[in-house]
Length: 150
Figure 1: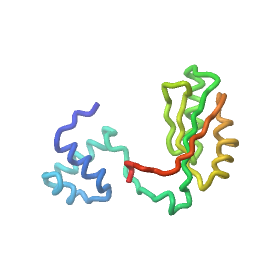
Figure 2: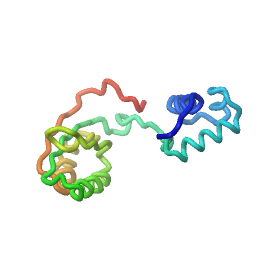
Figure 3: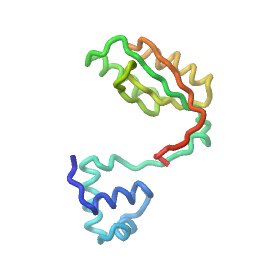
Figure 4: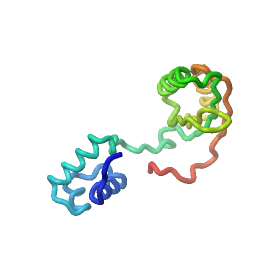
């Protein structure tokens, strides 16, 4: 765990609000001069606290406004099987998120596609054929009420 102080937390909060902020503007926003702010920013990146910067795209404007959550139950949950599943699921671009779950199923996947027909194809041809998948169950999102990514 990184040892973060108030300035580090202010830098993180400012960049979460505006990841395109210049270092000069960031320094001004957190009350530091430019060089110490750059040093702290580099430290946060090197420590892995800040993992990167990216554009937040509106999925609906990209034609990807169908969201489904798939519960996945595996036939084998030994460590090697989990590793094989994890490696394979990362290669499916439609899977936005994959979480190992402590429940009656093993993984919860957030899958984004253009429509239900495309989701059915992804589920049948990609997700169901992942290593050790025994069964799946799907929940279709009707509306996104909160998305902290913007």
